[in-house]
Image (cartoon, rainbow, N blue to C red; front, side, top):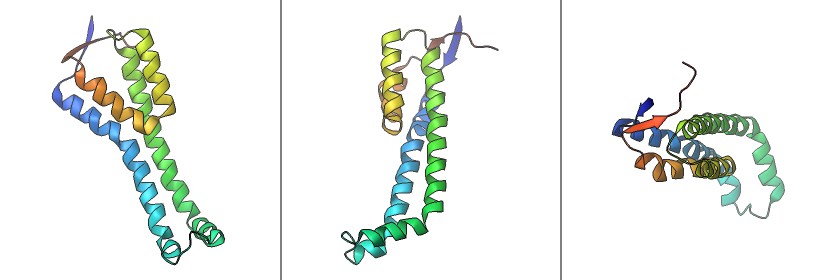
Length: 132
């Protein structure tokens, strides 16, 4: 029988990991709002051309930040998918529900999965064998 030790430190680390995608995306949003402040403070809500031009001038930075955010989200998502697949005491329907929910709502679903499932897991978690 293969077991995984899910002590408080491991659960805490997985909790921190689950919040990384939403924090990185929020950082991108804050950056975008900061670069648009000069346009927005001058009443630029109606000046769509100014908003567009300001966005275009910072496009490469925004692209890189969003790409990094997407990669972070994908890595954490795959890590949590592997964790779900290895759990023995979770039935297939529940696994499927979590996988579908996480696939659609990655940044929001990961902290929810940590809060509702990982925090409640026993210290010694039975898991399926892996290719060792």
